[in-house]
Length: 461
Image 1: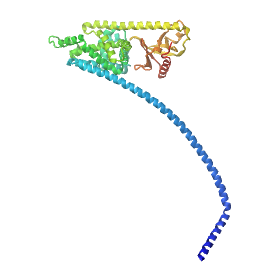
Image 2 (image 1 turned 180 degrees about the horizontal axis):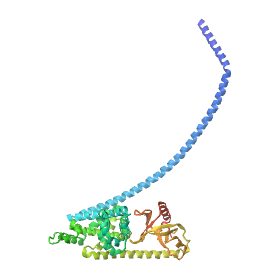
Image 3 (image 1 turned 135 degrees about the vertical axis):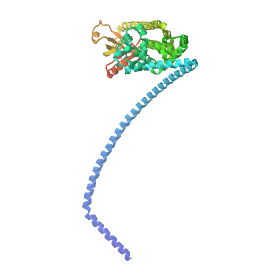
């Protein structure tokens, strides 16, 4: 009982102390409460600001996500285009490999004689390297003005003065020396730079990857030719004749096997035909009539020009005559196509009288390469109209006169418009009658002209 009373007393004492402490700290607690209230208001403001920042950040993130989605869509389209291009490239490579495989199979089946195999490999290497050497000439020796500003005639007269390193390091110069007499008789005053350019233009036409295929097709045709086989046997017999003086052999026969000498002359004369640009014209004609088989087109092409390769010292005049006839034939066809084009243009002009006149899309100066092997680059003033016809004249002042003649390029019918692999700032426009080469002044000028031309391609009259 006493213990309980003591506990109660202690409890009451503690309660009194607590009341006193509470009463004495009342004023202080009110100030703290007020301060706490103000602190709470400040915290609410900070919280609202933080929330606003978060909302702004979320909005920016949403915009970034939208951009990312757009980029992903663009990337998907790009990847699709890339896959399509890769597929097309793969198919092209497969077709090329198939053609190469086919020609290799045919070569192994048709060429069984040991000497013929040696001839075939020599011809393929020689013709392929001729294409390669022309690239070297046009790239590394393009500044050799003493050579490239010379005509074929001057080159023939001064061939002994040509630098020895050119003849030794670039075999095609040596070929030009051997065939220059034929070229002079065929085309007269040609510039050397144009000869090599014509060879490279043909390589571009068939595709650089098909140059060796072309060489193999030519080699097969050569081996199968009865006249070549007869000349091969005759050359071998002469080389084995002990009564034949060594001085009667040509310099190259002394170093080469006799049958290689015969094949070498055929390769040189094929190169002569390539330099005339005739094969480019023949290829363009066949590409519009013969499916998509490059091998078939090459076979038909070589069969057509093979009779021109008359061989032998006594046949040199025949070769010149055949080469001249081949070029005359192609020039005549080009002239007929040009006249037909002019006739069509006159008809279009008459029919356009009732239509609204075309508007000028772009105009400016460019240099134009001529259609012939002896042509030089000349500055012309070009005007591209909305009807897909590009007019050109000697100068900008001429178009002010209604009496001044104007020549045209039908860019609306162009099969191909691309940058030249041979000339800087040069546009190639491939029409049905010829490949036009127009040289601009800068990269920006090239891009502007290509953009303008593409606007009027395939335009309907």
